[in-house]
Image 1 (cartoon, rainbow, N blue to C red):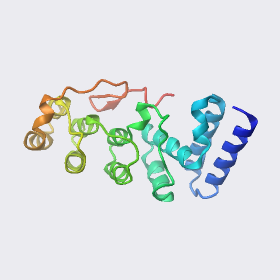
Image 2: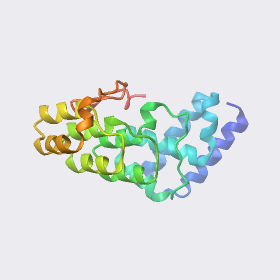
Image 3: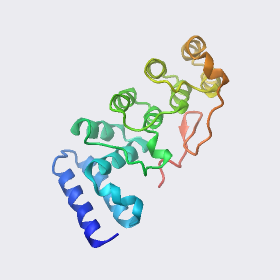
Image 4: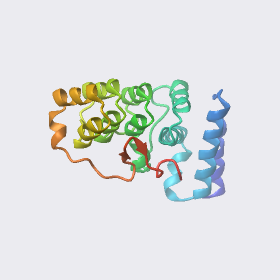
Length: 198
């Protein structure tokens, strides 16, 4: 990365930090900035733009389960001031899946409302696995991704009877859908380390 690009990205972070009251969020932004500067490749160029830098930081916070900081960031920046860069890997880009893994319906709803990131059947599968009926219901009523057979299997395995009953009535197509395999899949409600260690 050139000195000019580094200066631009540093300047962007300084501007961002001026409006952030939380020290924890400020540190998270600095950590992302330092990581981007150290990578110095063509994919990081877009991250020097504030809205994409914020989006990248948001995805990392969500993936790491730092719900409070992600909610704070969404409260600080209105619609349009955070955008998920398309250079983000699947692991980060599926923000709604990651919000489900973090057990946060509030965060999941905000991401849905603001169209930040993507969602897959893994979101409802995770909600069913952890027995989070309200989240399953929200995803069913507001999203089109549905669930896979894994949702039924895990709800039954962990004896989430209300969730299983809801799925039986409302997600009959999900019984036919094989769960996608990605490195960020959840097994028994536990996020694999691939999301948190990078």
